[in-house]
Length: 448
Image (cartoon, rainbow, N blue to C red; front, side, top):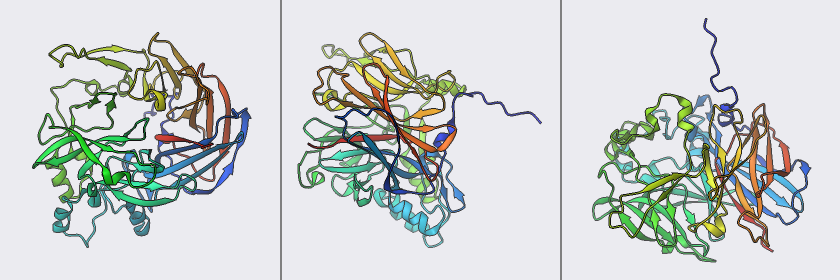
């Protein structure tokens, strides 16, 4: 029998496939190495795949995993840790039945004898109620409230102290969008913008939605569409995970990976997962055309430049900012979102290099790359936190949740100096069950 060969021995992919078996409701303390800056006080909330298991069944895709919220509370030189499952309708229904009863992105639910094809037909017109509400991608603030996001129209408000799921909000009821990206933009004045899909005058449109900031009160009640554009492919709107924003423009990337509306309706009728509704327009060449798995992670950070003085705005120049593969880029968001910036931070994405699982800093002006790396350590998206009296763009720290490749019950909060990526401190926690790798998060500074 031929022995299986590990083509990427430096990359431990199983950190994504772990299933948390026991929530940590009360904060636990960890072991501190180094010194946590005295000025660093606040809460890091993380979101991501928490469990691939439901009873004796197992999900077929990472994006189906039940949402698990993580909380790192930093105060007076110490850090505590908690984790809890998001109490979505999907999660509660699955746990009650002890089987998969809601179809996900890549996994079909077990047939429900109580629901006829007529029930499924009626559900097509209620995407907020018929689709999964397993919001396992990101967390964002709306005023003083924190919400867990996925790309469906339902978001969940969570308590940033206890991680309790407080309430469920269906955005189709306030702004009539069918979906939205899982990465809205929070502006300096507190306004929130997102891109979604809506039906306007009987036609599908990509829309930009604004949620005006309110210190107290319901930001969703005053939501409004501030821009719209028809899809390039009328019945195949592009799949959108995020978008860009500047002081004057919204930047929407209409990629050739699309959602077939007809296939989506059909798949709801016959109980097939969302992934089978995706359609690729082959006329547009990308690296998906390469069968080498490692090539999928060769993405390079590029800057697209458009001369707005030219009459033909379809001519776009691009230049590579750094010759390194990276994912989940972040910057000094609160000050430089939508404005010219110099530095960004990211996770190293390449799987066939010596130092997998790295944190990266890129100087977009010089192309200089700095890197933090440690064997058997897999950090999450780096988040920049500025010093209270910061004068330079990179005057602050990078914080990142790190899981261990050879110890599934160990998770750490890593703190790096943002200027040179040197380690300042870390707090390591021993968890009662496996700690999965998370996706995205938000840092909430403690108010003085």
